[in-house]
Image 1: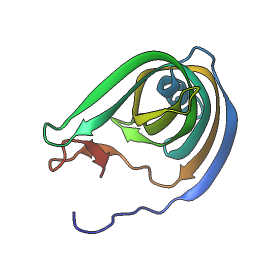
Image 2: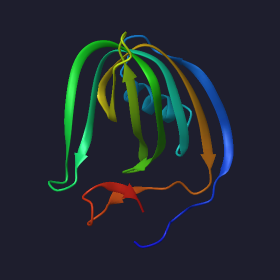
Image 3: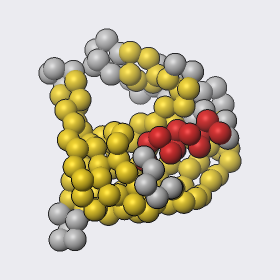
Length: 144
């Protein structure tokens, strides 16, 4: 692909809420989307975690390298989107975390990332939802 590929959507419902203490960040958002029939959305999260799993994509080996740690950290920024994978809501998000000294760590967000406290803003996008599919060039599940 040599040019930007975009799809047009309209703004749907807007949600703001509190994430469940002790819940998994990704699973909590996925379950909410299933419950209220969201198929496309953009979201941001602030708060804190008690443990996290993050990673980065190794482009040469075409695999994610992940890192898991139990640590009380602030969510400085977490943003992501909801689209469909195998017909179900799928969360793709990145997160930046900080400790008490301001040292940061970030990357692609994975389960298990356990919420200590969190707030989410979620903007539904209406229109034909994008389905993720395997991309031969990158080895990733990307928007088709």
